[in-house]
Length: 394
Image (cartoon, rainbow, N blue to C red; front, side):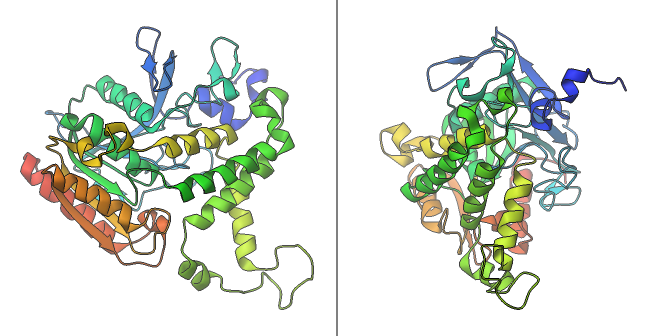
C-alpha cells in the first residue's frame, strides 16, 4: 500500500472519508448533474455505498436500505472510522430478516452526508477546499433522486424493496411518491409524512448549539483548523434524548449516581444518565461532521409529502402498485403512531396494498435499531410474502 502525501496525513479523518471513502463509489460528472430542489445543479458529485449479497440474473432481488439522520452506508459491515459493527446488522445479513443470502442489499450515504457522498465536508472543485456552508441546501427528494442515479448506475430498473426508519423512512416514502413504478415493496418504519413543529424545534436547538460553538467559525472550521466538537456533542445529547422513552431511560439509569454514593455538589456528571449522554456526544463527534448535521436536519424539516401534492397526502400515492408494510412503536414520541396511521389512511385512499403494525415496546424511537423480535418477524414475513408474489426463489 502506498504512503499518502504528508499534506493528506494532516487532514481530519472525516475530510479524507468525505472525498476518498472506504466504500464503493459512483461518480457523476458534469454531463450528469443532480438537479436540486433549490434550483441548482450539483456537479460533479459522488455517492458512496456498500452492497451485500449477490444480484440475481434478473436483477429482481435488490433491496435499498435508507439510513437515518446519523447513519451512513455501513449498515452491515465494520465501520471504517469507529471499528464498530454496522448500524443495522441485527436486521441485515446472512439469515437475518433482510437476508443477504437471498437479497442484494444496497445502502448509500445520502447526499449531504459526511462518509463519502458529496456534502459540506467534501472538496469544492471550484475552491479546492471543503464546501462548508457554500454547499447548497438539500432535501429528502434530492437524496432520493441521487439514489435513483446510483440504482441506474448499478443497472437495476426496479427495486424489490426499499426499507428504512426515521429519516430513512422519509426516503422510503419519497421513493414511493416519486418513483413508485420502480419500487415493488416498501417498509417505512418509525417515520412520518412530514416533520412536526416539535421536531423542527428540537432540530433548531441542535443547530444553534453547533453554530454557537466558537470553533464552528461560520462553517469554515476545516479551513481554519478548528472543530466545533462541543457544540456538536451538545446537539447529539439533546437529540439522543428524543430517541428514547422516559420508561427506557428510567429502567436503564433511574436516578443512580455514577461511581459514587453521594452527590458531589458540583456540575460533574453525578448521575449515570449524565455520563451516558456525555459519552454519546463525545463518540458522535468522531464519526460525524457538524455541517452535515445542519444540512441533514434541515432536509428533514423541509420534508412534507402532502404539501408537495396540493396539501392532500393521498395524492402522493395515487396509482401506486407498490406493496407496503408500515410499522410504528407505541413509545415513539418523536414519530408517534398517529403519523404512521396518516400514511396508512392515505395509502388506503389510493387503493394501495398496505399492512400496518404498531409494536408495543418501551424502547422509544430507537426501537427500530434494537433487538425487537416482533419487528424482525414482521419484516421477514412481509419480505417473504412479497418475494413469493414476485417469484423470487427461497
